[in-house]
Length: 394
Image 1 (cartoon, helix red, strand yellow):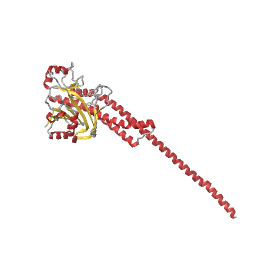
Image 2 (cartoon, one colour):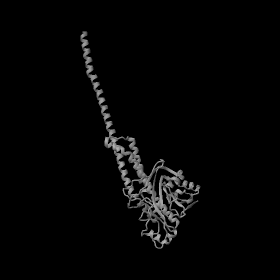
Image 3 (cartoon, helix red, strand yellow):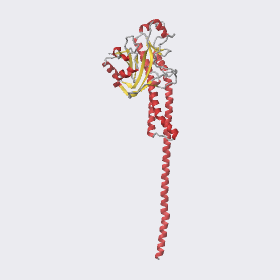
Image 4 (cartoon, one colour):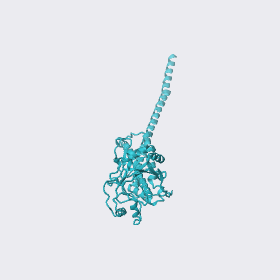
């Protein structure tokens, strides 16, 4: 079953968004092709603050969410929202065809950008159903064209072990790595959100001061668009985490060469290897700075202030802009390092060529000296010998 959400106006005007840094998020990275691989937290911050989901209870606070919660007299439960980045992009048409064939309900949230998949609870193994699940509602999964999948209420294990393999044939350029991001969220029922509309001028989804995503809206379509916007923000973080991991892997492989240069004053790399490393650096920098989804707010949000605000909030919460700045500084360093190594190799090559020329000149001088010896000394001796022989004959 394929349905289309009510379209909203798009604007293609160009402008720059400005986000202020807050703190670094944490994410996990695992190698897809290694069955024994284990999750490891990315070292993105020295801070002890953690944006990942915790099992602590959300205490009441004097904010809009708490007032709505008290008014509706409902104990909202927190669930995880999990984003994973798998590949360069997804073929959404193939995703829709494949999932529809498997009897999943799909909706086009944003044409050519994101689709919504409704996952019925009865199709889940008990191990994937959250412990505190009581609302009897289907789960939402967003498949994004940028190669990311975001699940609302479902864990990373479900995505990697069940959902992602279903759409594996729709992948383009698999990374071989998986980066994930996980936060908490609560979803306020439509009735409670409608009741609070008269007393709340800022009705809509947001992130509260406890790093909790609050999903609410006056219509189901509005809530779905809000979820899609949060999904793009989370995917922005995981896509950036992939580049961070690629750079860390590159630095770890080149560290030994820098150590050899400092200790033994010699370069263990060849010119071809250095050029390949420079190509890797350019590729990372290209993906970081030439992809608008990473460095700027997507154009489709310019005419939707509420969605633009959500996107800015989640990006600020996950420290996207500071991480981009740090990544660019690291790229500047490794680029300068590769350029310096290449310059040293070129200098050594130039010196070697100079010595080759010097030796060739020396060899030429030797031969010329020998020819001079032949021409003058030997010829003179021959003449002297001939003259002596002539005198003896007489």
